[in-house]
Length: 210
Image 1: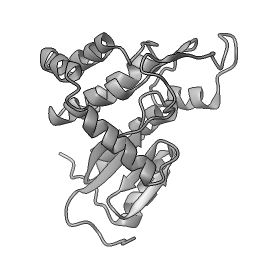
Image 2: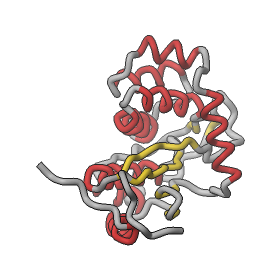
Image 3: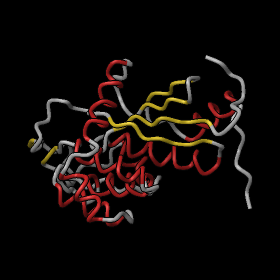
């Protein structure tokens, strides 16, 4: 892959799923990268567990209320994220991904992603339900009635399923995965220093402040 500096903002694909806790952590880091560097971020849908039925499925909580914080929970707290314990349901995230496509076209992708992750991991909502996705969209500043019409008609489902198929064909087997143009692939929710090193390696300039 080339290490020449990009002529314009570097496109960064963020391959993630709204039911993936590491993807929530990765979102925080890529938001910082987007604020500080000349990049354009595009989220790409992924299904962490393709076997999850449309209605979702029960899950057994991995931690108990009195357990000490896990490494993930400690890192989340440092990033300003709260993972609420006790979730007993795994959602099918296809509908949430459809909403993300609508949000992208409305210029509200970042706000929508933040609210969707918060709904799932902090509020323990079932993000496979239409009304939950609509509530998330409203908090993200979307036109709720237009969003409802798009979701009920599944306007964006072909696009979502095509993108999910592309990630599988590309050999993506874990998320989050970050694709920097056609130049570099970074798997996992890396910390800030790793992203900064990638930006330096690729010659991506920082945004001008002020």
